[in-house]
Length: 163
Image (cartoon, rainbow, N blue to C red):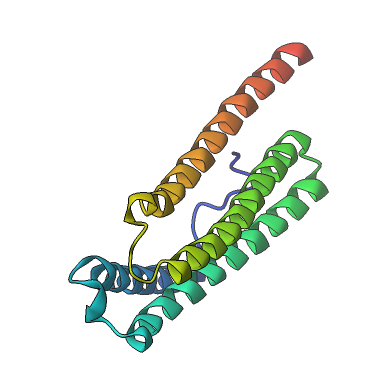
C-alpha cells in the first residue's frame, strides 16, 4: 500500500503488541477448549463469563485500535494529498465498518438463538452460527484482495496516462 504510509517497524510498541497478542491467543484458546471439550454442563455460567469477558474486551480493544490507526493513516494521506491511497484506505475502512456492524447484529442473533434454545432442540440450524464468522472473514479477505488488485490496476493506468 505504500512505503510512505506504512512504517517498517513498530518502534517501542513491539513488546506491547506481542504481549496483547499472546494474551488474546491464550484467552481465546482457553475459551475454545472449554466450549469444545466436554459436555455443555461442565462449565457454570460464571466460569464461562470469566472466560468470555477477556476475549470480548480484547476484541473491542483491537477494533478501536484498528479504527484509530486507520483514522490517523487517513489524516496523513489527506495531508500528503495521496488521493489514490486515500481512496483505497477509505474503502478499506468502510468495509471494516460494515463487517463490525454485521458482527454486532450477528452477536445479537446468537444471543437470541442461545436464549431460545436452552435445551439444544434446534441443533440442525446451529451450524449457521460459526459458519457466519467464516463467511464474513472470507468476504473481508476477498474485498481486500479486490481492492489491492484494483488499486494496482488504477495506479498502472494513471502511470501510463501520465507519459
